[in-house]
Every structure is written in structure tokens, then in C-alpha cells.
Amino acid sequence: MNMLLKKVVVGAALASSLLMGANTARADLLADIKAKGEIVIGTEARFTPFEFMENGKIVGYSTDLLEVIMKDMPGVKVKRMDIPFQGILPGLSAKKFDYIVTSVTATKERNEHYALSVPVADATVAMLVRADSPFAKPEDMSGKTVGCQTGSAQIKAIDLLAEKLGGKDKIKVKEYVAFDEAYADLAAGRLDGVAQSYPNLADVIKRRPGVFKILTPPFGPKVYFTWVGRNDADSASLAAFFDDGLRKLIASGKMAELQQKWFGFTMEIPTELPTPVQ
Image 1 (cartoon, rainbow, N blue to C red):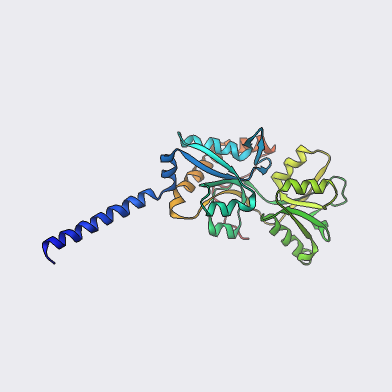
Image 2 (image 1 turned 60 degrees about the vertical axis):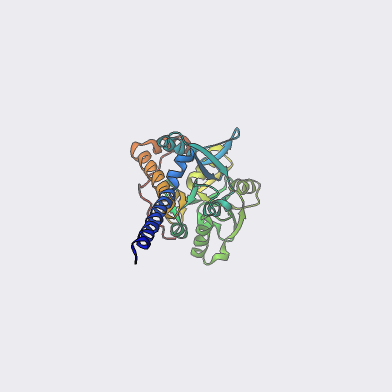
């Protein structure tokens, strides 16, 4: 190789290396967000008291958590998109928003495909029934119709309860776009029960005293609600930012304070997500 050609080859290799380095540096979601001055958050704002609309704004437990965490990202505006739950994970994968701040139950499948955060609340499933119903425990739902949200992890919990009772056909599941629709049908007598996380149901009882009751004990495995990021190298820094923020809230007692505010009780929340078994 003559000297001129050698210089050209070396120069091209150096330029390529610098270009690759620049591309690698740019491929960092957290850095991009800080440079842009805006983060886009996907939320399902129909999940009281976690996330819901009030006077045209998204409020609730998750909103309060998010506001505290975002103090560590000064100068960045938060843009929130209200998305039906059925589109929340596909929307994240399609990069319609940067991160999900809504209550997503940690499951084995979701953990394999997404970056699930540190837990934000207990998501163990319980059964809501009318206050005047004869049912005393979840097993009394054998042969009954139970409402649930389409695409939710609670459907799996109902299936497990039905199998315990003798087969999936032991409980008929009626699916809804949002849980509020299921609560309305339950109150009207069109359902026998609604399966939902205990914290959500405790809020329903508080808002509609004398209308409903919760059957105890909760059923299904111990599970948690999480927030969600994309499971790729570009998004790892943003996922770590939110995990660190949530751990700070747990350690400082701020998370427990906000749980008391929104739920009327506190929950024991681990600083690492236990590996989901289902």
C-alpha cells in the first residue's frame, strides 16, 4: 500500500470511528430529552386514584410521584398523553412517547419485553361485589360473571381462580375498555363482581360507601404495579433515572406519605422488582 493510499484509508477509518462515536452519543434517550427540554409521558387517565382527569388535568398518586421525581430534571417540560390502556404498551414500543407513567401490573411476559420500574404500589387482585350480595369470599364467584378491563393482568388472576374452582368456564369474564364501566354495570346488577387491584377497590369503596364491598382475602399471587420504559440500550438511562427517583421516594418516606394521601393506607414496597412468576 503506497503512502497516499494508506493516509486515505486511515483518514476514512478515523472519520468512520468519529461518526460512529457521535451516533452512539446521540443514541441516549435521557440526554435527548434534556437537550430537547421535553419528555413525553404515556398515561391511562382512567385509573382512580392512580391516574385520572380532574378539571382537565391528569392528577392522582402517580402524578404526585412524577412531579417529585422530575425536580431532578430541571428545565424539562412534561407532556402527558392520555392513552387507552389497550394502546399503552404498543404505543411505547412504537415510540409515540418516551416512558409510561401509569399503573402497569408486572407480569413475566411484560418483564421480558419491557423495562419495568421499581414497584410503585401493591397490585394484588381482590373481588368487588355489591354490598347487598350474598358472596363472602372470592370462591363464591363460581358460576358467576365477573367484569375486568381488556388487556389487564387481572384477567389472568380470574382465570387462575376459575381453574382452582374446576376450570376456566367456572367464571364468565366480561371485558371492558375501562374499569369505571365495569363498576357501573356491577352497581346496576349486570355483573356479579369486578376483579381489580386492592388499592383501586379500596378507593371505590371510599367514593361510593354502602354500594360495594370487597371480598377477602385477595386472590392470586403477590404482584406489583410498575411504570414502564423501552427495553433497549438507548432507553436504559431514562429507565435508570426513574428507578433511582422511585427508590429515593421509598427511602425518604415520601412514597408512603403519598399513599396515605391517595389510598388512606400505606403499602410495603420493595426497592427492587421481584421477578414476576406469571
